[in-house]
Image (cartoon, rainbow, N blue to C red; front, top):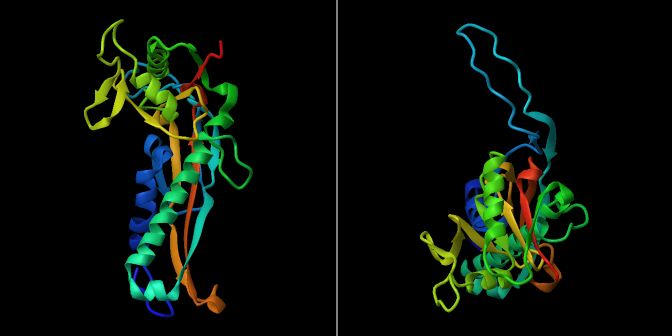
Length: 280
């Protein structure tokens, strides 16, 4: 962004996408584990996957039997998440354009955190979009023992995803539980970890080939097993980055705001596993 004493040069939509949307997608765990769907229209209709339907062997030219795999549909409408920051005109003028870029970076981080809070955390009041906890008892329920000795429940989640045709592509848990899992040993008296390192990111572990990510918004003791093929992060393309001297004209300050619109579609809740730690 380029600053003057009064206003900021207009950014193209591609520049805004690069400045806001791409960094948010890189920082947000939710948008990493979902299949991202950018849209230009107000909402997206997604089929609810009740089952995979059937196929049949047919003669050439014969009618193909109809099999309805989707019995319902969801309309996913991205909701606005926004951040507003202010800096003095002197700072904007003296450090052009670095100060405004740094302010934009703080907005990106704040938006990414709010996206993750909506997806992993307790259900937020409107207009926040519904996240994983909204699917409730529809999720496949598994239990993690209070005393950790292995990762069998995570392997069971992988097996469940495979059985329903929705392979698990990510586990997401809290940082504390991720550390407990990472310190499990492969045998009594061994110093070798039970989990395998992720060859693509050495600071991350995998279970059965599935990476374990963390978010502070996951409830303590929970592990979510997420199939990207059935879980969507819908992002409107019309993100905005705007700066103005008018809002705080009397303070001789500049306001910078960033706006995105995001929502989630869980088209097959039963393919998502919620692994909850036992309390006793």
